[in-house]
Length: 214
Ligand code: BEZ
Image (cartoon, rainbow, N blue to C red; front, side):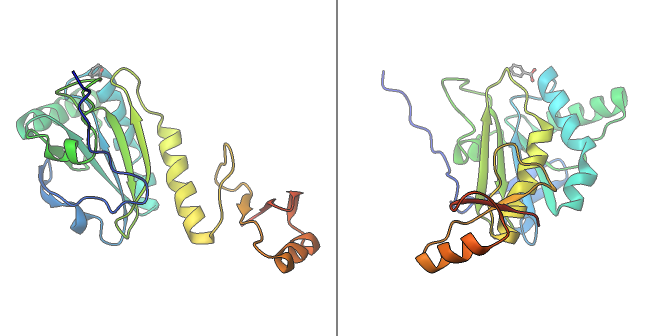
């Protein structure tokens, strides 16, 4: 049998809009996205161990995301009652409260729209996806993890800051970049630009690979 093709949004695409039921009430992505970044992430199922660690990780970083103008939005193919029971159970057991909205995607509408349902991995559970959507509603970075490997919160935080830094300063972030480190400035596109680059006091490996502090 031919493998089933799955719709996969791409970096640079407008984030497909949706209206959903969440743990904090009805939500429209385009409204939620107004004026801030959205980090949209799926988990395979409520009441599962890896998912509990991941969702707790997001919840415990709520100040970081708020401070960096990013709203969290979770999702799984579970009912709203399951979500509420799970949020309550984790809160009672650990004291951690998932305050961000979690989409009850029982009809798999959003999961399919965002390529979170990857049949080779699971026909019924969303993979561990993370979509970074900028305030203009454009998808800027996508992560997909399988069911059996949890994500890395430090990397999620790092790429959010890297995306924001790259946009604000029109630069690029090199390998393993961390906030506060030098960034890469775009290579010159003319001979005049090359001469300026050579005369500049940028940290230069070569004319096309130069760094500056911001
Ligand atoms: C988990 O979160 O632990 C999990 C969920 C689905 C499949 C495997 C693991």
